[in-house]
Image (cartoon, rainbow, N blue to C red; front, side, top):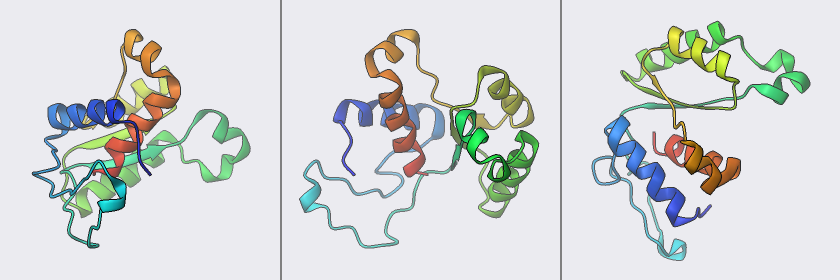
Length: 139
């Protein structure tokens, strides 16, 4: 997929500032012209963080048996961080504020892209979701 450049720039700035991750450092090849992107599998290193998409809200109602508790999610995240020797985790989630606060309490190593009101007005929910996807995809 090709995402809008202004959203990719926001995601890249976030990665650089909070996750010690840049395309150069992580050996991530990118071309503005997607038809010229010929990347050999396994050549990208990825950022020094775990990327997690933690679904909540309406997904819980239709898939309750598939959605872990926050404690269960944290246990799995910690296990993956240990396996891959990582000390940071980026979490993309639609959890309500109370759940995000609980998640941060249980997992202080967690960082999230939390847009300002101005950014939310500019990018809308869809743009924020794309920024989250971009950051996750570079882990």
